[in-house]
Amino acid sequence: MDPIQSLIKELAVKHGRKRESLLPVLQGVVEQERYLSEHSMIEIARELDLPAAEVYGTATFYSFLEHRKMGRFIIRICKTISCSMKGKNQVLLAIQDMLKISTGETTPDGRFSLVETNCLGLCHKAPAMLINEEVYTDLTPEKVREILSDYMKK
Amino acid sequence: MAESYHLLKRADFIFRNENDWEEILTKTIKRTPQDIINELISSELKGRGGAGFPTGLKWKITAEAKSAEKYVICNADEGEPGTFKDREILSRVPYKVLTAMAVCGHIIGAKKGIIYLRGEYHSLKESLEKTISEFEYYCKKIKLEFSVDVFMGSGAYICGEETALFESLEGHRGEPRNKPPYPTIKGYMDKPTVINNVETLAHTFTIFKYGAKKFYDLGVQFSRGTKLFSVSGDTPKPGIYELELGMSLQDFVNEFGDGDTKAVQVGGASGFLVPRKKFQETAIGYQGKLTGISLPTGGSMMIYNSSRSMFNVLDNYLEFFREESCGQCTPCRVGCQQLLIGIKAVKRGERPAQYLDKLLKLTETMQLTAKCGLGQSVANSFASIVENFREEMIY
Image (tube, rainbow over all chains, first blue to last red; front, side):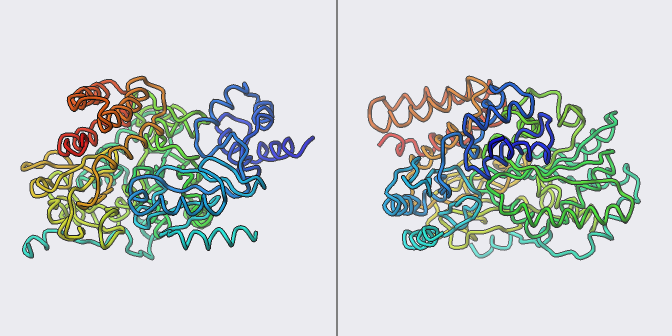
């Protein structure tokens, strides 16, 4: 068994093998691997006894269930109106400049991915972003540079 | 101006720290289901997610549905742009929500509750689950068979629509179902289900503790009680405020605006944009108020000052809808795309100004034919922005 297969087995034991277990299993793989590879999805389908197309169809519906290879740290910056009004673009430029990638890309060393996302529900502390599950608010270009410097050391 | 200030009435129920949830739970479940339902009905509490369905009636119908298996679901998929109150409730007073879910379960005959928490709020999960295990321990102690699970969403606005939420819980794409049947009859796993917004559940705790009259005496006719408002945008004091329903938008702007408020988006991207000239005649509450325009809201209040371009605002909303449309029905999927392409074309001068009227017609079609609230409500913000700020769309 390869590591993905044993991870999926473990998740299936924890969450069950019913159709209702599919999202928690998909989420569990994304938590570990940061994305769902074709291999993962086929293995999930096998483990839960579902057509692979069903697994693919479900997974690709959800924006947090990435199916492209992602970096270890996924930066999701909110682009919805309040954040957009409060200087999201400058923060985004600062991130792009520091990581030398555009939105939607991953750094060559596989550490950071940068995506824009819809409303994070932090409008009163705009602009806001997530790095994996961590919440960062009231961002400025200076603040985001500091945050990223810390991540670069991790 | 000073005189209208006190029309805006602040309240403090939701976040008030109540140390007696155990007592309230024990006491409330000793009452007959009919008694509790009557109390909720007489409080006139309506759904705080935005749709405004009477809560007592929802519980009543589900209680009367015949099924051995029923569910209580707390909708914490708070995705409407400009709203962030539910996260605060779940992080500051989660036991109120859990108590309400258990009482509901007791009334309708459900042993299982689920909190559907949006993926963006993952950081809340651990502490919430800790509170749940303490809560379940107490339920066992008083021999109340009720358990609660947290189910995480994965980044899909549409899953806040109740039937899409069920689909998601059942392991499918979050595509809304046709209604009827309504969740009260056929909800999660096709079983009778009460699904309530986080804030609605928290208000029922207030009603159990202080009685229906206390709640009913707040607010105005058809819009009883208090409501949490999420205030953001061009305001010196962004944040969450509990206010009595029924205030005029003018009073709201006097309190929260920066002195240069041009418009307020009431109810998020799926709500209405109200321009300055209509602040006075607009009230915040459910439909049915006798005078003026009455706007219901899940509590999202986004304030724009005169430095903001309403074209950029609409462009931002439409991009949001285009991405969040589930794609299941054509009016919404194609409609959202075409509206976005359309306003950009008008702005660039590739289409005449009259093309905006065609787009308005398109939103009417979406309102009539889209399968769920997402596609149907795009017309709200689109029409209210285009009609009030037409020149900004063109030049």
